[in-house]
Image 1 (cartoon, rainbow, N blue to C red):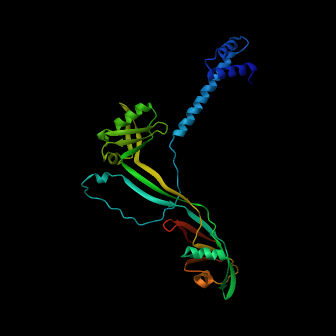
Image 2: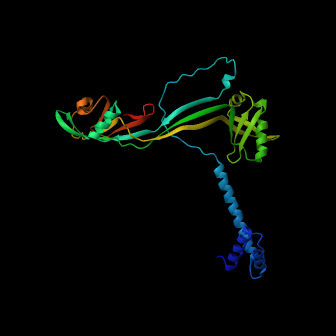
Image 3: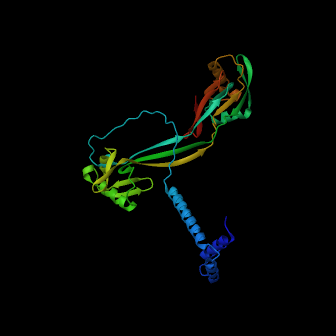
Length: 332
């Protein structure tokens, strides 16, 4: 428990630190410290200990803030056929140019089509909106008139972004660097070791060393050096004349996210139809009958692209953004 004398001393110290020119505060503080009734040394020791602990916490937080952040994006990239070609005898340094690629990532919406529902996609957006606006539709199914309700498909907000990746041909990443030297000394050792031609190295242009994560990025002056070193995943790092430790080397990859777009999850050309219960015919026949009905302009419809029914059990369909057309398309 803090005593009244301790509170007085702490208060006077705080005031004195704020206004060191105030002679009155300085005199009061001096008298309080010299008072034999007060255990001022113990109080001062406690305050010094608290200050040290606060400085250590502050330094730890600053270190955590300086750590580079990374983000993981989970996306099932569709399979595509790719053809790789190579230059057998390049006449210039084109073989050492950075390798780069760019790809688009778009949110895929999962939608559960409940039993007794159907999805219909029109070619014209306006036709779909008119069908929704009308609401109720009498459709002939199994030689009977069935009342179907048309609504917009409820989807969540989506995300689209472009990821640009570049693999440098002049830089390498180094990991598992031993923490045995100061930051400046280790930077010099890295530059020295990776410049040795005996191990495939070359003249080093720049060293970016991160002591906290024990990693570094080495930039070489000439092309081709990085490729020579990366032929092996390990490299000897000499920290002294007769002592070395193995560090791991890997290609330096730079990632950049561009064209981040948040779009509304509304399929403007697709309509949800409800009311398909107690239907005995197979789904394909019902899909054909719905297609024929909504294909007619007299029924408020228009050209239909596709119809999907869920008569016996729920079905999962997936919507994806067609950024070129500015709409959502789907497939089961």
